[in-house]
Length: 74
Image 1 (cartoon, helix red, strand yellow):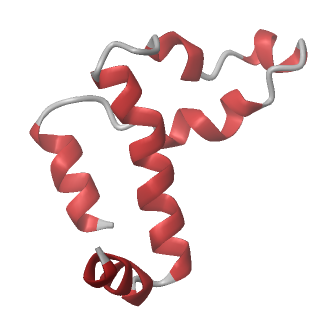
Image 2: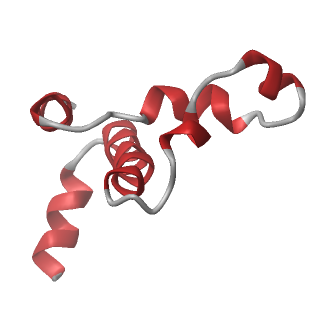
C-alpha cells in the first residue's frame, strides 16, 4: 500500500487531480449508482443554482475503450 501511495505522489498534482476527478465522476455512472444526467451541462439548471454542472460535464468520460485511452493520455 505504501508503494502505491509513493507512485501516486510521483504524478504531478494537476494531472493527479484530473485523473481522480474523472474517475470520481465516471465510475459511479458506469456502476449505475448515479445517472449521467446529473453531470450534463444544461444552462437553465446552472442558472437555477446547480453550478457543479459547469465543471462535471468536462469530467464525465463515458464508457468503453475510449475512456481508458483518455485516462492513459492524462
